[in-house]
Image (cartoon, rainbow, N blue to C red):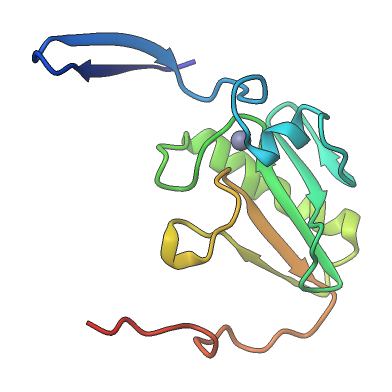
Length: 148
Ligand code: ZN
């Protein structure tokens, strides 16, 4: 488990540094919805689970198949220094989840949102696996332009 150094500087300019471990299970001390699902504190329709990640169906599906794959450790999004092993494992796991959901051969769309412009909702890294329908091209139809 990698350690990270966090330094606070108070009003007198004195600094306090603490080490913390990235990716500790957060369910006991944060309100993260997906951490609570991973911990079993909030029920979900679990599709797949291993030591590193868990897949469960989206509660507000936007396609006949809409499953979310999340790492069990908490990372906010792709900007959160997610270890390559975790990302690689998730991508490797995705076809297995697609197989379970019956869209492995028909095909599926995979989406990861990062940051305010992406319309991300839950700040816990997740991949959307969507399928069971013939998607159109991804477009910007419902997107807003910046005015500046
Ligand atoms: Zn979380």
